[in-house]
Image (cartoon, rainbow, N blue to C red; front, side, top):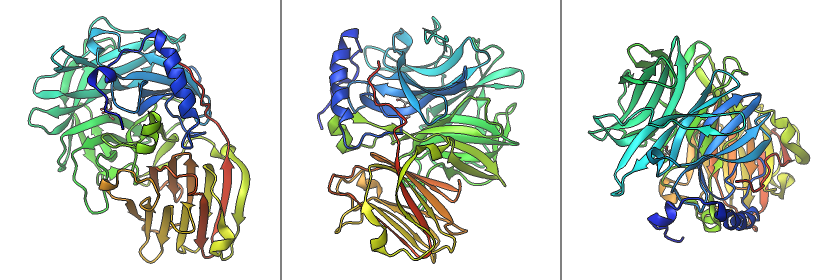
Length: 500
Ligand code: FRU
């Protein structure tokens, strides 16, 4: 892939660039690997979901956006909107790095509102001096109903002493009679931390309250990105994306993982008391920087969106085409018997088009469930007898494709992308394994162009990954004794139109 110079990465978007981007969009819209029901960048690179909220009767979701190519550079916030978390409409860029305090990018953050008149957007102003020294500022801007943005004249929160240039991704929320902002950070000794700020008014002044400590924390990290704190029913969940953690057996195998803890939050003393271990939100290869929506339509549940990707990873097939990244399906999070459940938040039965294959209770021989693999589809498998199951998607007569296999003896579910023609970050391994203590009851695969999301056992586990099958990798095969299986073509619910 082409090397991008600093000047190219930090090129300011000008009005006259629209024609160039439109050409790039037309090219990438032809790609074999574009999705039809996942949010994807109009051009260039998409990373974290930002400012996710249900405001004025609509879901608002922004993404970190670099328009000119598949690399990290000067970041904007691009907005998509939805009524139902399934149909998404491109709206255009809303947050521009147009102030001195965000001169090198509007980095990630969250949304919060109290009325219909303004949506607060808390983000990190990535300021750099001419010598390229970074000063991270936390900013609270406002978006009006017509989409105009009002930014403060001065940064809302200044960089904090004792911590490095890595202070970012503010989560703004209300707590009792005041407001909190939680920020991901790195201490001067190079370890990851979370900073808690407080204010009586959203506009400030904001005061540093305390470092948020996690009781019993014993992991090595160098930075904690994208923190989020939500109350679901009677429990708190602390989500963050730690960097620098070591793999532990089959756990935490990605370069960077997206993790969570369930427990109790003592806001006054800024302590989180976990009830249980640190866990991965997703057991696949590519899932990072997830955040929950600020919303008041779902009670005792949170709604989460994540980046189907990971920092410092490359995705050569789409990178070569000039684009990178997708957002996940929205997930509804609940806590049931102390455990996190993640189910698709939208009514995805609407996604299903015609049924391509169906087998009901009966032994499925390989050849009966062998067919042509659609690039966008929903696959449902029911496994009442906890039998061994194997799915080979985008396989050939010679190769296994994306293999999802379950061994009832080992109670192990394995996602294997190692034999696909296009290797994706193979240095971090080509399989991901999860143990299903109670066996495999059912799974659903949401396949869309170059993203696969595997939801297991009604919310128990999700495994997400990118894959870039070639045209001749085009068969599917499903096997398992006495299983139910169906493959449905998927409808388009996200328009791939060009809007700046
Ligand atoms: C996570 C992240 C955030 C940062 C943003 C920049 O992927 O590194 O910490 O705000 O991406 O695009």
